[in-house]
Length: 405
Length: 127
Image (tube, each protein chain N blue to C red):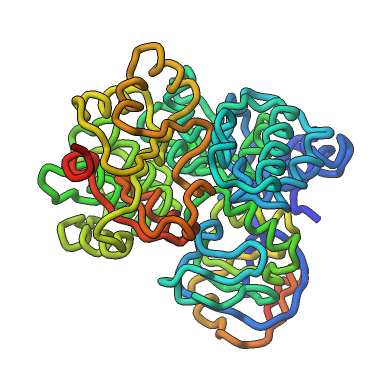
């Protein structure tokens, strides 16, 4: 079933078939044959397929897996049943964290969710816990866990987190899928593909916008995802604040396959392409479909402590004129509560939600809401395509200017 | 014909081809297989029981579960043919046992929308 050869065979190409064969160990071969049970057989089957797909010569050990695929809204019944069955036998071999789920586990009764949704979502939570996953329910693991750094090999499925890991956090990961990261969690391994090596980008995007805000960086990311391969260089940007950086990672992960950027004005031998006003307008017109929103969402990626502090000071005593949902990890909310930021946000009328995010939330229903204002390109894409609501894109500074008093 | 086989298998069906990448999570209904992104070339069409020919997958890593869900609800393509393979499509097809191959640019150009073909990865053939 799988074209993987026994121990110690060299990476090779079978004549006329151009099938690159991954070198696998005796142990891995036995797992593939089902000697260690169905779970590991499935996990290795996924790793070999993804390894073949990315021309990896072998599997290598990883230290940390971050999974996507925890929201019942996205993985549905098939995913829920798969995880429930898997949890009977599967156990993680490395530190494993996981993406947001569909609602905040502490206040979901306030929202219009069906009994079935709640039941299925809770089943997914239990399955992950049983497998040994840390119930972090966050898409920004890089802001809530200690980063090993030093080029440590990890397996991050959440696309913004994978891009952040490779580009900012001095970690190395493939732009994993939910299933390849899960396979990594269960085996402690991942294919040694291009992004894990020190690959030089073959494309430079010249950032031509003056004084870009986080929305512009999100659109730059969305543009980069569309035009770049595995990795991309960005020129004309010397520094990125946290909000712009996360926006760039989120946008890039949404539109393409690209899993890494470097801020570098002089990568030799790269093809060049400009990101100017005209290109930005095209993306704006693609994602912005409304002049105003019925409600505001902040977070996709979820906000970290720095952004919560920033929001609190930007508000400066003003209050939102409409509903404003703020998404942040549980760990961040707890810290923010201790420091007092949450008081200020709640006073301003924010609904602070943890365990979940804008992206693919069931908490925004097109039967109740026509349009949403957000500064997130990633959020905009999924609100439009999955939730079916219109989107009004604005940078945070403009949201505060227009929508608070 | 040189195929790079990612997930093996044999299937017959009609080609449904697009030159636009597919974001499985964001634009495919996981129960029906209908493409619901109005800006996509295949908007409103179902990928169910087709030989889906597209450049590569993009976007959310959870798309792998979408592919698995399509298979579980009987709405998956019979097989997929890409120019480049991303981990989301590869792992989703691996779990769902959906044959998946990569072809060269020239071979990709030759694959015509609506044409009935047989894909046999063991024989390295698209007929």
